[in-house]
Length: 156
Image (cartoon, rainbow, N blue to C red):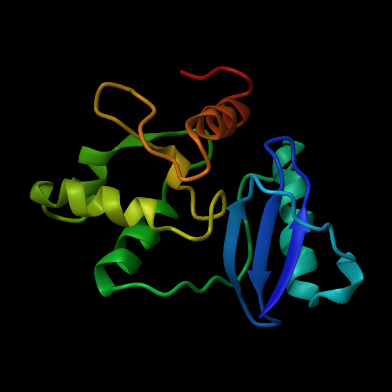
């Protein structure tokens, strides 16, 4: 497993993966070394380039092989997150309905929070039923930043 830290307008991002897949994209608040991009597999460099293009408003859909560990239910939630279009949001309730069981709203929220591949698996696009920005592992200010970026500077 290789590791790369990159700078972004929303702070430092850690990218983990192999030559075959990306397994983690996460914001890190602690100081972490910025390593030489040439020392990691080409796929991690490509992930960094796609994230950079996303932050510059030139990329709306990522094209990367992803792999993260999780239960079948979490995998289903993460697959559903990938279907939320750029610049749009859904509620946790709508996510639970997509999964076929409105009673799974808490479990869906928990699975959303366990997503290890931020931005690319767009858990930031899930909001509270009243439009509230609830829960984001990278911090609510980052969730607000990402949604604003995708809406061309408008939050809602």
